[in-house]
Structure formats: C-alpha cells, structure tokens
Image 1 (cartoon, one colour):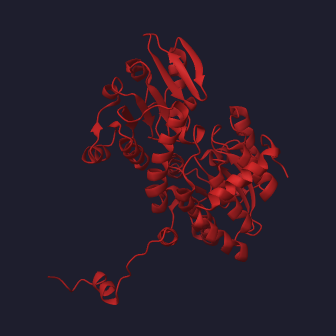
Image 2: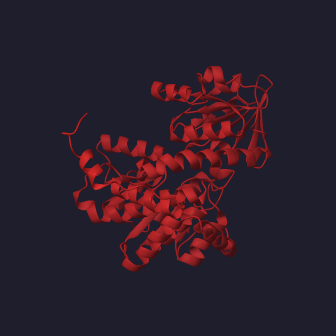
Image 3: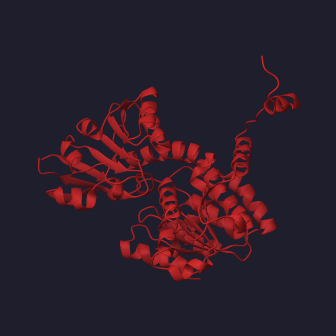
Amino acid sequence: MRHDVKDLALAARGKARILWADRNMPVLRAIRERFEREKPLKGVRVAACLHVTTETANLMRTLVAGGAQVALCASNPLSTQDETAASLVQDWGVATFAVKGEDHDTYYRHLNAVVDEKPAITMDDGADLVSLLHSGRKEALPGVVAGTEETTTGVIRLRAMAQHGVLGYPIIAVNDAMTKHFFDNRYGTGQSTLDGVVRATNMLVGGSTVVVAGYGWCGKGVAMRARGLGAHVVVTEVDPVKAIEAVMDGFDVRPMAEAAPRGDLFITVTGNKHVIRNEHFLAMKEGAIVCNSGHFNVELQLEGGLYGLARSRQEVRDLVEEFLLPNGRRIYVLADGRLVNLACAEGHPAMVMDMSFANQALSAEWILKHREGLGRTVHVIPEELDREIARIKLGTMGYAMDVLTDEQRAYLASWQEGT
C-alpha cells in the first residue's frame, strides 16, 4: 500500500489512542456497525484531505467498514499526529500521506498522492483538495462524482467557485449542519483553542485581556471559554449583527486598532485575510501573544508583514517564536500562525467530533444515492440527517426529550385555532 508517514513503528501507540477516542464517539460507532453490515460505499474510492487526528482515524475506519477504498492526506502541515498516521496504514489499510511539520512541497506532493488514487468522492477540510482538482489535476476531475466540506473557510471558497460556475461536482456543506457548527465550532474550537494556547505558553489566562477576532460560531466559543477562565475579553468584528450580539453577550467590542494596545493574547477566528497587520503588531504591548484558530495562517500578516518587519526572530519554546519589533518590543507568535488548537494541542475532543464525523459519513452515503439529481453547487446537509445525529447523541449522553402529542402536531399544522 502506498503511504508516506513518519514511522510505522509508532502504529501501536497510535492504535491505542484511536481506540481511546472511539470510546467517546458512540454515534460514529453505531454508523460504523451499520456500514459493516450494509456496505453502502462498496468499491467507492474516497480521497480525504483532513486533519490526521485520532478522531479522523475513526471516520476513516467507518468509511473502510462501509466498503470504501480510502486515501488520506493532511489538511494542515502542523496538525498531523504521526502515531495516528502510522496506525491508519498498518492497522486499517488506509493509504495515508501525512507527516507533522511537512513543508510546502511535501504538503502538495501528499495532496497529489491522494488524487493519484482516482477518487469518486472527496472529503475536504479547507477545500485544498477540490482546488487542486480544479487547477493542477483537471484530468482527474471527471471521475469525481461528489464531495463533502468540513470547514467554514472551505465552504466560502466552494460557494465562490459555484457562483462563478467553475465547481465541477456537487458538494455537501457538512460545516453547515447544526450538529456541526453549533457544537464543533463553538464548544470544540472554544475549548481546544485555549488548550493549545496554554500548552504552548503555560500562560495564566485569568486576569489577562484576550482579544478575539471574529464572532462567528468559533469566535463565540473562544470568547466564552476565555471568559470562563477569568479573562477580560475584547471582540473585534466587521458584521454589525455579530458585533451587537457580542455586546449583548457581555463582551467589549472594539476595532482591532483600539484592541491592539490592550491585548495580552490575540486569537483570530475569522476565515479572512490579514486581520492582524503590521500596524497592529507595532501597537501591541511588550510580550503580547498572537495566534490563529482559523483554517489558514493568512489571518495574520506574516509573509510580507511581520517576518520582514521584525529585527530578529527566534524560537523560545516549542511552536513559540519571539519577534523583536523596531520599537524594541517583543511579541510571540504560536505555531507559525497555523491552527493553534491542532498544532499545539490535540484539536477538538472526540465527544464533539463524534457529531461532525457522523455528518461526514452519512453525507458520503447520502450523496452517492442522490448524486444524479444534484447540480454542481454546494448543498446544505439534509435536515433529517442532522436531527437523527442529534437524537442519537442525546441518547448516548443519557438524556431524553418529550414527544409531540397528536393534538400538538395538529395544532402546529393548523391555522384555524387562535385565541
């Protein structure tokens, strides 16, 4: 089997970690048991560009159980867990191309390696795989019938492609499932981002001023968890609706120009480019820490920005770089501005990824069944799948809901009964 991982000798440790995560992924486990019986993906080649973590490994196991032939590469150079990659190759027969810390050329060589497997379905986390298929590897595009996308950033890119009429096949926006963005983005990103910051720096969050750029679902989670740790939280936004929501949630809302001199820790989660720029770096106080939890590190102006601005640059801790600015102040950037929750920690907890990856698995099954009627655009995940995942998850957590009575159903469907 073709693969490129750091060391297959790490597989035993990786398998133990994958099975540990699986204990907290009961919804995906139930889907895997059904897939094992029914083989809904039999013979289907799947190319996945995702973060190579223990939770992702359990999604790959589920696809394999369903009969798929799977090839996986990393969606970020720093998010790979090398022991997980080794186990996927050795224990579950997944052609895996991922090494933590891989350079730009290796990253794209790995992307091309999964395209070489001639996929019928793509699974993306940021749309790099789809972008490659539509640019450098157009010869493989006719064989792809459908795909899924996990991230806000990726969905934005794919909707832009669809709007310009260049998207070559239908995509299910897994990111837009309520059981994904309500929970994964808010509770997963919120917890794992602060986890990554603390692991990298050992800073005391309580009493510090944390500037959160962006108040989407991820930003809401980060702001909530930072406040929970005792921080003073400032939110920056460009959307007035989200800005007023942040105000009503009790946060201070300021432009980045005003927030820059105040912050001890800056976290970007916008999905946009150059949210923190040179003028903001220069305004920051001595010792400010800067990181990003959005998908791409372009949220920070590093290339053509801080890297050229700084008088010196040195690594002072693992994944912590010190930059000496012309004004004599030092600031610290974590993980080269890449996803701090995955580069410096382990990403989202398995319990929340259980719902996200259940959406991925069911979307792959659904889109194969319905691909003939789908246009070359981005589709929202069917509501019935979303609700079924929530129902199963609720039950596995030991909770139960009420059920509408016949009278209540009739009332909700009528217009005659009033005051």
